[in-house]
Image (cartoon, rainbow, N blue to C red; front, side, top):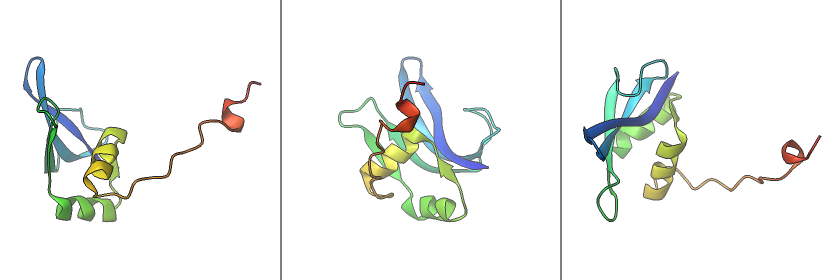
Length: 95
């Protein structure tokens, strides 16, 4: 499965990330297919550069974003904001 995920770059204690399309079996900083954006959390506010055309392509062919990348996409308007899931329910009920 193809995942859209963060790849750590930058110096020690000064992370910056590339958002990449990669096989889910590849290591975090290992082989990837394509760079689709960058994310720098150190700046205030965080700097985010996205190639929305390529992101939409990867999503259309079945790539799954990780939770952090999904949040970044929603904040930037690439994905619609998801409705909050009910945190209660049967799964949380004591047995």
